[in-house]
Amino acid sequence: MTKQYNVAVVGATGMVGQKMIDVLLERKFPVNSFKLLASARSADKKVAIGSETYTIEELKPASFEGIDFAFFSAGGDISKEMAPEAVKHGAIVIDNSSAFRMDKDVPLVVPEVNPGAVHRHQGIIANPNCSTIQMVVALQPLHAAVPMKRVVAATYQAVSGAGREAVEELQEQCLSYLDGKPVKTERFPQYGAKRNYQMAFNLVPQIDVFMEDGYCKEEIKMVNETRKIMNLPDLPVTSTTVRVPVLNSHSIAVNLELQEELTAGKARELLQKAPGVVVLDDPGSLLYPTPLEADGSDAVYVGRIRPDNSVRYGLNLWVVSDNIRKGAATNSIQIAELLI
Image (cartoon, rainbow, N blue to C red; front, side, top):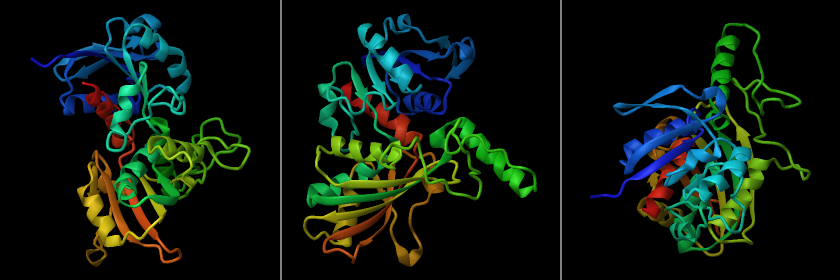
């Protein structure tokens, strides 16, 4: 008989938390019981999981008594406070925030890229940033064949990455704009920012706050996390992260400079064989990935595979994936599956 596990989902009322529950069921993760945890304002709400109804409980240190796996998706501050409490109670924490990602004692894991890292955990395993996840899934099979020299990424990130309220604001903005009504702007680049922008029919070249060097935090995350996951601490990586008026699924234009020649045809062949990757790349048939195709899927889609003729050994890729699934919920569940 398969061993079953007691599972807690922290942030169970959020988009990622709810998707984690869906994915646990879809992948038939051996769950003995669920514990759904959130803030006090969500306590006592009812949630149906399969044929059973669960009550949302207020998150407290004692919530983790008897829990085997605790999936966190409630923000960095809550993770920093409560993840150590979960570990004290014997749970393995898989954390979706940025709280522990760059901690040298915490593995940062993408199962298609560095599965062995998962076994070095000391109770906490970090789930990477959504854009980083889909990019490294596409990079790994190419780097394994021909080492990379430099990575340049420009992201086109959906509003679901900013949460349910951001999705609702984009929808409301579209309706207002098309109806000729004033457009409410509160969520972009983020709630409480000094200045907010209309997202509908617009682009916002900022995700998270700006650092002193002019990069925003999301861009720094992609640089540092890529190096850590791929165990390439000196790899030159740079990124520009942009919020676009798409509801779900992130897209990335990736430019690679390699140390030796790798033709577009060979790259396509390597990616077609790579775990977790689906190649959609036929310019003659106008076939390439779009966010709508990726929505609801766990795959990382790659297309527009072509040489970069401006450098000696260059490639361009277009990488698209559902940021709520593979970029958050599914990757977390896959990490737990490695452990069981």
